Image 1 (cartoon, one colour):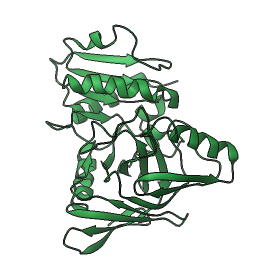
Image 2: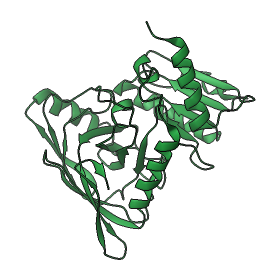
Image 3: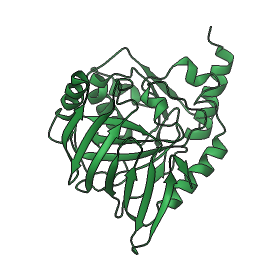
Image 4: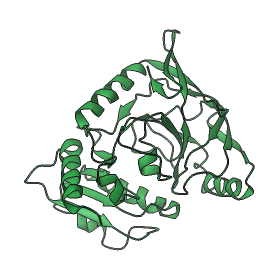
Length: 300
């Protein structure tokens, strides 16, 4: 049986530490089984609320609803905890129940390593060999809201940025989970050219077809959208993207919408994350110097 006392303490601590929850705040908690769009009257529920928690289903066909809802919350400048697919395990000594001060220090370190980056070259033992443009694209984190970034995943724990939309070239090999679909049964190779996915291959025809289906949602769904790096020491690898993308020694790349993210410019009704393990990342800075900032998953 879930320990509700522990879960309640972890949830309150997360909201206080990440969203600056105060006694006078009025919180709206949204839950659902699955939704394709905001129901009539749902946005009206935001009136007179300060904080919104999205404890919603983690399904790929729900992404258009999520993006519509997130946009409505952001337009009203509310603080928001976004938790698609959250479960008891994350709240009971897991990824939600961590040392937030230490995680904030780790996030500062990663952000500093990517400062003034022009590009990053990413490789993995599984075969990833991908270069992303990062000119004037700042790295941020979700471990604490700011005056301009008022939304965060709960559980949180990643540093992320929006790569330049026409500067992703090479191959990305996925050996973890993707979107809300769980872990891949075999590695999936995604080939990018000038920021666009041009090919998807794997030894499992069903996975290849599913990834291509997601990539073909609309005209913007094959465009590079995000690079994220896991920072949360309490996150495990469970085949659940909400948790897995926060785990140490993982990184993820998303394609589709990055509107609402720092410097993001690509519009789509899809935003799909693809996770890979133990990356090595070498940054080239604007002055032409290079530095390995992550080696085999370890932040240097």
